[in-house]
Image (cartoon, rainbow over the protein chains, first blue to last red):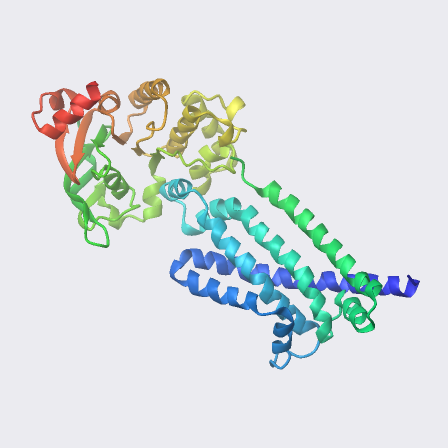
Length: 206
Length: 246
């Protein structure tokens, strides 16, 4: 492998990480409050989770394509890729937030309310800490999936490790495909292990 | 018992959204410093009655007065912070140490850290769990009986005048249960809190309470000391007495 290619791999890996980090950050910032809202308004839970789930089923290449002509968020490049990746990250985060909070032992919730906690205190002091590991498991899934999906971002000019994969496909060069696929796989495994370790540390003792 | 009623059920009823009445026309006055046991089968309405007192439920008929004021006129958060609450499942927060569990209401009330610590030490001592050994542990490291003691300490933390106990010792083995009943009695002899103690065990009711209120089908069936109930002829009362004697 030429030093030029290595340098290029390093650059695109960096862009790949930034794409995923920003989009998962936004998905978490939207998804956790949305999930909390759904636990307070259970009637909204099914339609909202259904809608978020439908987004998940759109093939990623198609979603990128659909977004290109959309004004403000669309176009060719990084912004569109961030929007699409955020959409993909949303479902696991929202769903796990709902599941995690709903999974808090009702006796613990009743004790908290009986002690005179406000809804907000119950959320911040009891429900969120106890649900944290489940919520983080959602972030972990979103991140791992996001690292894979982000390879498609190269198709709309957002860069990332997909650049080598598309180039390799066009050139029928397996080594070029691997130059993108291998670092992407390593990133996914690394993210999985790292977030998984934090998740275990947050798991409440029982 | 003397003094003003501290808790008063005045024709209190509770009906679920579908229309079914869980509690009907309950009138009962609990004097200040008195321990009253509410006893009855599952579904007799005793837990519902208890939850009306700390406004976890709001009566659909009549009212419940605490300290002379209807629960609906209280800020529910204030009312609950002044009312100790112990439940069968204990409900200790698994992510908080024993010390922080016990000190939670004082913490919510904004007590200074030093005062909370002193209070936690005092309370753990009171329920026989020396703070030096136990304050730093977590709920999962304790036995069922120890957890329930922590539950009682937590309910007493902010020195509430009223304590509600919902089958607090129901999940414990008979020996630990008897031990805790005796300790509760000892605590009450010193603290003289107004207490409502829900149970389904007549012997427990007789041990811990000054008077016993027997509930059935959402209504109060009989009220009196255990000696008075023993002389009762109502078949439901007899059934409970005989089950308790078995």
